[in-house]
Length: 327
Image (cartoon, rainbow, N blue to C red):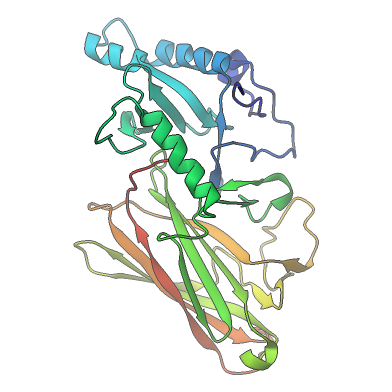
């Protein structure tokens, strides 16, 4: 029997009271058993708490959120909630998973409200936490969730279980002109943006089949369709400041592909093995349902030294929606 994780956490008054180990500078923070994701400066890696740390966190939350004027029904509801997992950076990030010790159901915060983190049971009430765990294990076993750098720009300190789907119905993939583009998103109840999405690209096939050895991203055109609203078209250069140069087996990191020097943590310039991957956000909407797709313009060779006519590759649309399970 394992009593949670003694995973390192950012230190503050709350995590000190919980007795969790301190995260040192430049240390790996992505050790959460329940995975994570990042977008810009927002980071999540959800740690399974030891029972004593969970009990102490529950006490802190009750002290900070309940008062003498709290209605009895609300007090009883809150006191029944045991926090069993939270992000490593509790304090900057309020992502906390709770189990109702009376019903066994799992919840997460959305604003100041508790929302279910698993669908209600059709039968056998009381097994909410078990069903939540089983679904998470299924996604790991089937390859929907994989291990990779949660923050692509800092691979040395962010390798962990990634909650952007790498397979399954929420994963989109398209290959055109020898360029593979894949994408998926994560719904973030704890964040005002709503969704974080991850888009990756790489070359497939051979240079002879493609007609070029390398190509560079120049611009993008996103088509965001929210249910009940007109389609929104967003155009821009590169992706969040990157202009990746794709080559066989990976991509090239240099001043042309990363002009703002976003890659840190000792990453060497030159060939980077694997996909080029980046993450960003897509905002909430009235319906909270829609799709995100579009096109990417590529230059054979590089933008400064083109070796052919530019071409467009498709980002197959992926769904924006509120899922039944929240991890």
